[in-house]
Amino acid sequence: MGEKTKNNAPKTSWFKGLKAEFKKIVWPDKKTLGKQTAAVVFVSVVLGAIITVVDIVAQYGIDLLVK
Image (cartoon, rainbow, N blue to C red):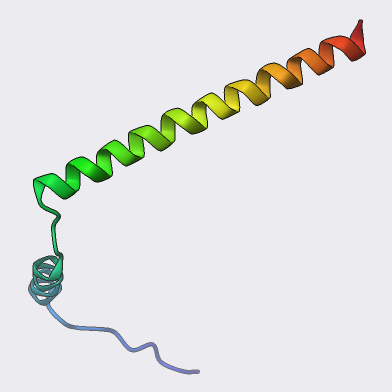
């Protein structure tokens, strides 16, 4: 039977790697963050409105079929 190999690296090296990866992240500035936030809110509101309209139309259609 084959033996499983264990990774005996200390946990500190994992945290060092995590810290190194976080240093690679390019965080957006306030202006970009504001624009992206506004875009997300706008798209969410528009999609919510579209879903509401589709729901109302579907409910109206179902009511016509049932009555």
